[in-house]
Length: 259
Length: 357
Image (cartoon, rainbow over all chains, first blue to last red; front, top):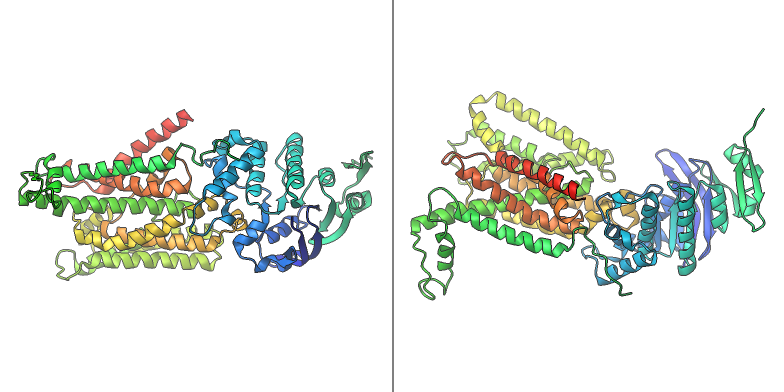
């Protein structure tokens, strides 16, 4: 159980600022959804938190700045799933999940019995036993996505950063993958920060939403507040209808203007 | 949780592969010592070896091979250094190739990528054209030393050029810098050769690779570099596996990518430069042996690295046997043999693996 906090985080790529003074607190065990048009800075923010790109400002886990941590300690606190993870075709499922143990293995050490037990456990818990010995190149998109989540889980990191976790999946597998994350969050008390394109899905799974536009936070709050037709029209430049279902689900439907 | 474990390798038990490959290496090395023009009957060679172990020979158990001192000298002073050097060179080239392929995430890379061979070749060419090969009366043969220095220097320049364009975080610029440096070194070499056409044959012999003049001093010359290189690369085999998912994800998994890349490149280059210096350019081994290993035992570097050593060594010892017996006393260049044996074998392996998959 850990919280993550962004304190005026700036990310610059080359000469352009892609995230500017972003601040947010994500309490332990909660799910923050990052939404916003393409190029809004969602991915850059996650990459900064994962230590992949340089940033200014601070990212804190449980109040302590991540930058001051050793790289393997940082990797053991924050698991990062990129938008398009690389899954080498000739690697097996078990080998791939084992990569998630890297933060816990010493520089000159090899995976030990404990690491193998952990990997077996994660594979069993996610029902991936059938893929443990198969090559990644032979797996479907949904199977690959579950292995990617398994790898993140094998790091035992309390914070999960997901960049568009469902962009490559069909509607059934989208929901399956997000349900898996939601279940793991409940079981392990994970804190989740995810960037998502699909506003309805983002609203269904997140506790709170942040709307980014050109690197700046322009709206933040509970799902129903952020997903308003006016806000979306202003920052996405589209006309949408927002339905509020009886169970509290917010559905965003694009509208087509006919003259 | 004590359920059935999921072995981490696609093709069963990595340890069995390593043990099997060591057995093969021992058998191939023994064959290398037993086969060759002149020398004793092949079956007497193992007896002659046993005879020389204390307590087994005339003083103890009384094993007697009937091998004369002159015949023994052919085995010990001519065949054995050649077998051992072939083993070291083959091991280092395939180890270097596997490491380069891992660190650059590119299956078509060989250990000569960053200019070790081109630089070494230029160094050797300069020495041979300046002093001539045979008329030299130095206490130490300068060809391997200069080749070694040039090989390391070329890779250092490649690395500096690549790094100055931000090449440490991404491997692409480094590969391009390598391509440029190789072309430059080869161009200079061609220019020098063209103006000294009388030694073209000497240089050509060097370039084609040779183990025929191997002595124990060659073995001692390369052994320290190759040992250091092999130990360092062996210690980084887990990191090479993490690098397979790309730099960004490896960084997010806590791996110091730029440092690992630097250390692996330096170690692989040191060993490669040393073996290039004593054996010339032996193609094919560094590129293809790592792939043979992957096709047989799976692609995890935790298996590929040790197997590249044992199978690379076996491969080159084996390839050297027809080279010295086929058209005896003339020698077929080892680089020609490696391609001749390796290419068809590789094609067959590729085919059978694809059918069985």
